[in-house]
Image (cartoon, rainbow, N blue to C red; front, side, top):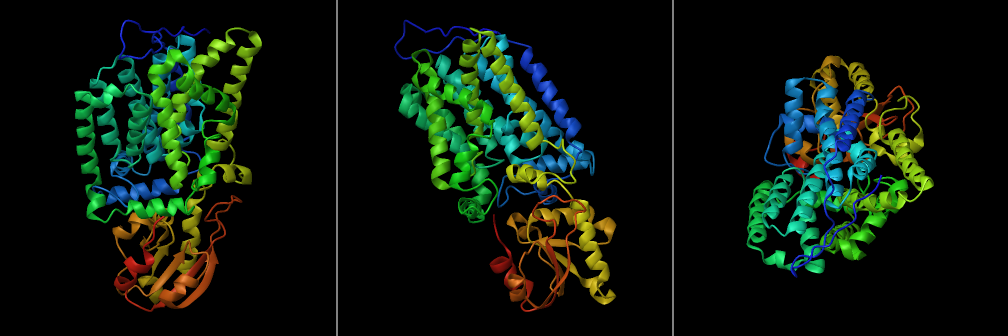
Length: 510
């Protein structure tokens, strides 16, 4: 494989040099189709992720917004469950297709950076085997949508920087504005892009009438997506504070920093670092320098505020696309070098498949897999989880059994009861976690509660006069996740009405 030689535009002073785009290629489409097929085949293994169970519940309570997200993914969950009720394959099909789209977008960005056909395929392979494509591509999640939104906006930004046609800014604004209905993170990308243009130029774009119109369009869409947050006191700020305090997976400044080096793959770090250097330093790429600065700014903000380390990962794929162009040009000068790039793809695919996809047996899933990929553990054992609750429920005296309810510590546990509990005779489940608290509280006369997801009884004893350990969650496998082996409590004697404690004590974010 060889790479097109970057060409410099001449005869103008307001357009910095950029590489000439490469020819179109069928290779990325084959790679994208393959990754979608693999994800679809593997999608029914293990089971629902706890976030997916939450999305299904949110889909039953459709709203303009939620404590921790916009309405887009709950709408997708509702649509999938309506078309194919109870089908995990249907629920995850949008994610597999979005993952394929991410692969095509990375290849398209590489093409705009001057990649020839072979290099575009190489960039597609790096994207297809990367952690940030495989992990959210296997699950329905807000991250799945975010990755595609960011990459599509980055591609439009490349086109904007290439020709200076401000109309591309309208596409960027539309993408980021629509993306705000998923999560608020596209606003972070908007800040990074504006900062990149301010630092690296071309600054004339900041005065372009189309860019200014695009800014107004983004403002209107952002205002619409923020309306629910504003009306409800911006609860996402509480969620962000919990993430910053390290109360969530993949959060905290140290974890966010370390994740930069593994979220694509440790083997690909030299390639995306090369892409960053090329974007920032190589004269022939000066027209795209704003993208390199955008990653620096976005990553700096994430580390400063203690956000999750994968927030900026789509921009890492942009750097990877740039680095792929240089890497293939370097490898063209020797067989050993080409073998090294092939090894990078093979090692990335093998390691990420084992760590991020359900290829190992769920029983006895190695602890190191769950330690690295927390989400893997949260896709195992939900039917058995509800079996454990059903055993405690059956053991209650009949008068208590008829009026008992379930209180869970997190939204996934409540979602599992909603999905699997009816056929086991379980009562309704409630939780104060994030928007679950808005989906309803227990009836006023619910004074017998089966509580799960509370490692210690302290909080429960502040709400009930009697708290008794009645059993433990048994998932039937040895996976080390948040639920397996957890205590199940039976609580009696509500000290104060639910209306008095629900919003002030039971409701929580994280």
